[in-house]
Image 1 (spheres, rainbow, N blue to C red):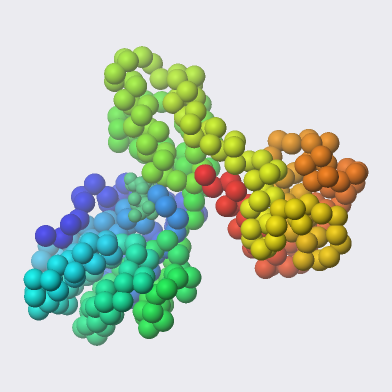
Image 2 (cartoon, protein in one colour):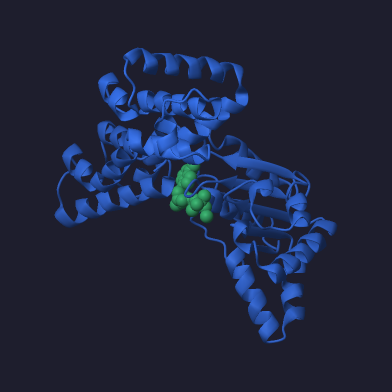
Length: 340
Ligand code: ADP
Ligand code: MG
């Protein structure tokens, strides 16, 4: 039993700038197991295709070599199996099972953190497979060095091969994904609707899929043509949730959190650098990503003139060009606010 889901293949994975390295590395590993990159470590946010790629690698290895011993497992299942094996004194079987694989695909490794015995056992499994030149592919929501509470010896092993990330798909990639999925679901939708969905759901492919399933359900149950208005009402929850996030208040809160200061101090008029920079970043982001007018922004930040806001935006823009760390930080905050 390999736990592989034949639904997930390379042929139905849509490739764009946000995932092309992860995709190419996955293909390379499946063509040359244990020779290309070992381990391959793929990380990224929820619903961006990590599990899909793991299954695609497994399916492709099995297609090239039907005798290959491949196993897909989530780190939670690995943990449960370990606990059972300890309880029923079947550790030898457990070890034989894992250490005799040709390819281990382990999903969401972040969940083994703080589970000492699981970490210990996984460490030995990893070493055994690695030493006998068997392929290991690991996914996680974060890069190895940012997974909290996981042993350093594991983190360091995760970095022995290749680490690749998956980012949320750009608009064009989202459009391509929607086209592909609509085709799979046998759902005919207009370009206008495709673009509407792509611009309403930005950071989670699973959510895009959910919307399409809902649209097809409406279509087959009500037997009505899929119109833009119908789609708008179906996606209303998501759109409202998104608009709620895009407020000056939420931006102030998020920026304050990132700089470890309070919202009150962020809004105060001090010129202290530790406060002034976050305040200007919050103004810049409010101007950039909300629909607020200058007078509205003025009121929300309690400043007296428009020039204060415009100058803050200019200063942050030019600082971002000079200071890569600041640029990264601002982008990270913006992503947190707009990813809903
Ligand atoms: P993750 O494991 O990163 O949370 P999944 O692999 O479960 O995400 O992906 C969620 C859903 O979105 C799956 O049904 C998957 O097929 C689909 N998906 C994600 N990225 C893509 C892509 N680039 N092309 C096609 N489908 C995708
Ligand atoms: Mg997953």
